[in-house]
Length: 245
Image 1 (cartoon, rainbow, N blue to C red):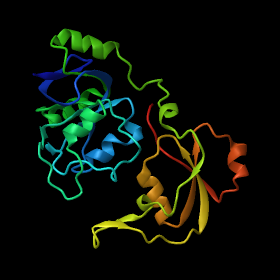
Image 2 (cartoon, rainbow, N blue to C red; image 1 turned 120 degrees about the vertical axis):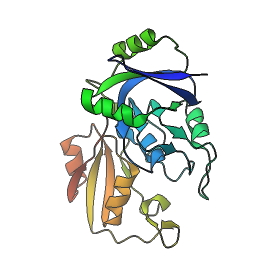
Image 3 (tube, helix red, strand yellow; image 1 turned 135 degrees about the vertical axis):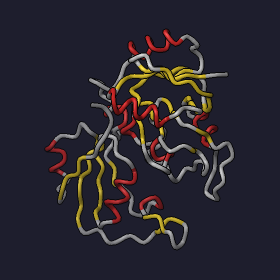
Image 4 (tube, rainbow, N blue to C red; image 1 turned 60 degrees about the horizontal axis):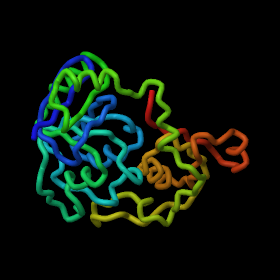
């Protein structure tokens, strides 16, 4: 069964579906990383977007629970050139296709993602429709044109933490990956300073990096007031990145 990616300017990219089925509308963007596709999928800053990977082979090491940058994926669709059907890695728990299917995210493979990237580089950011259901190019382009993008959308409210919490220094995910041991390194430096981190869509790796550098981190919702922050008496304040315009 064929699938397609239709851009709002009329450009069509056809391919084969993988992951979930359905139709998703969102801003199309690209990522040039050679690895780290699961981190891309679970990065809250990609909320509301369809992501295309420029590296030609994706999925060869599968997915696992440890490499998540948040509790769930945030992309609306995933576009790649070639899917590795059989993952080969001792840390793999699930294939990329099954992972996307479980989270109801449609994927599209067989696309020249570098040509797509060059098109976006020239024409600029735009909305797109990724569909495993629509066969009419005209309908798909119209759906992309009429759909919502990221301009004016408050995706931060959807991804920010609802509660204040302390990033746990004893959490196994707080350590830095050790090449020597092939696992998480539990040794962390003592806390020298305490900071408040505003969660506008923060990746876990930011928290890990801060803790690794001797900061105790209190994470607060995006709507936290200045008085509420001052009441925590921090040594500093960190503002994260996040989704939207």
